[in-house]
Amino acid sequence: MTNNERILVIGATGNIGKKLVQELTDRKVATTIYVRNPIKAKDLFGSVSDDYLTVVQGDFDDLTPLKEALPGHTRLFLLVPAFNGLPRNKKNIASLAYEAGVEQIVDLSSLGASLPSRTIFLGREHQLAEDAILELAHHHSSDKRRTVVNLRPGRFTSNLLAYDRPTQNEFIGLVDAQVPQTWISPNDIAIVAANILTDDIDKHGDAVYELLGDAVTGAQTAEILTRVLGRPYTYKQISAWEKYQLASQSGMIPHRIIYDLITISDSSFKVTPGLTVLLNGNAPETLEAYITANAHLLQ
Image (cartoon, rainbow, N blue to C red):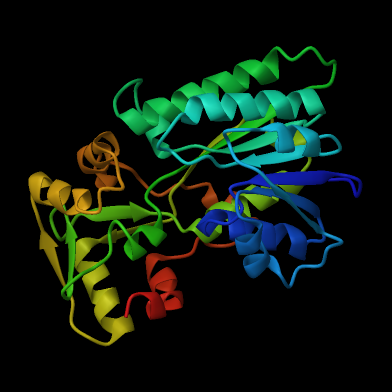
C-alpha cells in the first residue's frame, strides 16, 4: 500500500466496522467512513485524529453524498445490512466506486454464499451481490484492473449478545451437546479486512475467503459461560420450532433469515485452516476469549 491511498468504509459503526476503522487509523491509513449517524460515529471514533478520519453522512436511499466522496479513494470496504435490497445496494455502490477510481473492493459476504445456489435465502442474496460486483470489476471500461475480495464469515461470536444470547442460565442450540459448532470473531473479520486493504492489491486479486475461527461444542460453551460469568450454565438442545419461536419474538428478523439460521447447522462447517495466514500468523480469537472480553455485556 502506498502513502497516497485512501480507504472508504461502509458499515463503520457496527461490530466489524468499528474494529476495522480502529485498525486502519492505528496504522495511519487515511480512512473515510460513510454513516447515517455522524453523532454515533463521533462517539465511537472521537479519539481518532482528523488527519486519518473523515466522516461523510449518507444512506442507501440517496447515494449522492457517497458519489461525491468517492473520488480520491483507492479501496472500499463494503458491508451492507442483509435485510432489504442487498444485491441492488451493493451493485450500485460498487458501480460508483469503480467509476470513481477505486481499484479494490473488500466485500463482507456470508458463508452461505459457499452453498449451492438458492440453498438458503441469505446465501443467495450474497451470491447475487458477489456475482454483480465481479461482473463490474471484470468489465470496467478503465484500462486499470479492478478487483473484489469476498469475505465469507460464518456465525459471529457477537451473536451471543443477541440471537444466541444465553438466558436463564442456559445456552440453547439445535444440535447434540457434544457436536462442535463453529464461530468467527468480528474482531478477526476486521483484522483480516484491514490486512487485505493494506496489502498489495495483486496479492489477493479476486480471492474468496471463508472465515471460521473456532469450533466448540454446546457443552463446552456452557462450561465457558460458567467459568467466565461465575454462575452455573447448562446446554439445552431444543427443536427447530422452539428456536424459530424464540427468534421470532422480537419481530425484527424476517422469516426467511430465521429459517436459514435454523436450517443450516454450524456443525456442517469446519474451522478455516488458512485463517492464521490471513491474520498474519496470529491465532484466531477463541469463543472463550470473546466471552471473557465481553462478560460485562452478558451479566
